[in-house]
Image 1 (cartoon, rainbow, N blue to C red):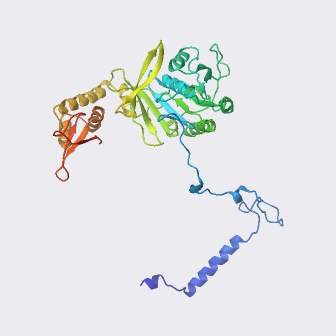
Image 2 (tube, rainbow, N blue to C red):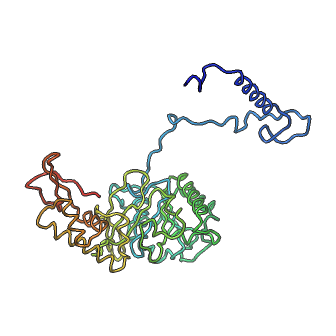
Image 3 (cartoon, helix red, strand yellow):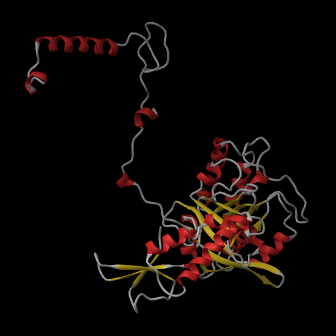
Length: 403
């Protein structure tokens, strides 16, 4: 049956079909007039068009992956801000965005390193702003961070704080690139980028926003400079970190790193820096930070890892009911585990009976740093959810909780 359906030799009618197909293909290949496929239109009787030897269509080639040299990551402040690309920085008002940017400026000009280490000067800083004159609070913040003020440039501003032909993007990209290249800048700051845009640019248009960010990244790459830019959050937005950014989604989709600053969701005046997006490797743990007073000048200091993520930082703007629910879930779990570890299934059933939802339950476990401790081996292995420092029967290995 298989031979009847798929014969090994051609039948007479197959030869006829192949002959007709061959003649049809030959007629298509026979040049009868100049077309877009063989060159520009030409009068009848003219010789056929021949592409020159330097035509890009003839000399174009594909590069083997084995011949491509992998790019080495160059950091301004590892693991937060990368050189040669753009970085989005967002956060609520008074969260310390400008203070963090000033710390990066100090890092680039030979001042204290944000992530620790020996100071080194990479180059000058080009700070583009239209929100406030550099003669006021901004100058104080830079001085408090330890930046070399001689290496911080403010295009479009005079020494007495008057505007003089301010930069507008994308109109003044050539002017900006000339400043960056001419001064060998290592850091380009746009704070906020909203006030640096042309009036004709629609920040809700994804194509326009992406084109703007591509051009910015080209300038940053050519100078090997870091380019953090800030955006204002949406008003009364309660979603995730990427949803809270105003305008087109391209503002958050294009950069490979999106950093979020905010208040700790459970108060105490604590602040947190977290990566809402991190497309260059394993996402770093969120870090707490403080803004210290240095002779009347603010200075940002990282205080160490915290068990939060960027979406948790939006709880500072939640209404009282939702925030109270999350606090109640945290307090319930802390009280329930105070006497010792509890079986995970039993703990979850009790949480449901107490009216605690799954997101609140897992957020509370993460904030408390709960561990899952195990004793024995399968199939008789026992598990307990414990607070840090608690033991399972005097021993046992522990692992951080996960959903």
